[in-house]
Length: 138
Length: 138
DNA sequence: TTATAAATTTGAAATCGTTACAAAATTACA
DNA sequence: TGTAATTTTGTAACGATTTCAAATTTATAA
Image (cartoon, rainbow over all chains, first blue to last red; front, side):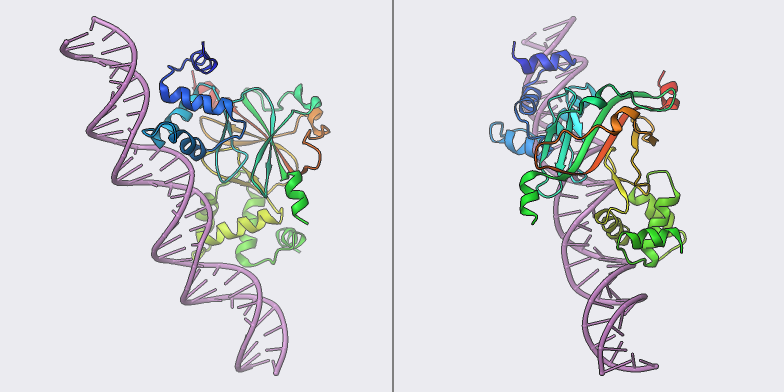
């Protein structure tokens, strides 16, 4: 079975044409796309696709933990189809988001949240300048 | 000299009445306020304060690293006058943001960013349920 | 002090991302 | 095949943020 359909089913989501297309887009692109990027790219092949459907679907995927929501960029929400643990880096100049491995030491560190708190997700974000932009900056 | 004025000067910011009021608000409240919270609260004492000034000032403070911008909540940007390293927890139910100490092990862990990248800020975010909401959830 | 320039603040209008909602289309099921 | 449930769609509304030019305040020089 298609790995995208399988992924949706595993998270209790009925695989409609639109949902599969959106989930596939997320799993096949490592660009951490915004709603708009997903909508614009997919609309080329699915002319009837609605922006609302993209919003609805991403919201559903989020609720079922089938994707990761990146809030690293204050200007736009980005989405990541790769839910395995990894950190992210946002370049403040080109505004690209890069995947970064979690530093070895910090993986095992337990969140120091107060008693009774239930941690469901952890996000490690960096920002600064990527190599290209760092060169251009001077 | 007033510690707020001092803080602004240290970051190369001319301490106007509005800037001091906004920076003071951030330093005296540990609520991680939104633009709206800052604006509404301060307007009670400063009736002529403009929303645009709050936006302008927060943007200036961010550029000069005089505050910390929290992107943990996808619905709203929050601001933190405490720039010392610490993590944050967002409750998905009450949407409160809590300060969390950085877990001992992870502090020294160097970011595993690619060669040539310049890390300027690090953010560690958790989300889930706070103790109160966890109790109510059932 | 007074005049002039520079910096800051203000409010209105525009913009942009997101949500609400009801109708249309599709899918599941009796 | 008919009916109910689910999903998708497009429009309108909403809310946060930005733009922008005028008004105000502050700094500087005569």
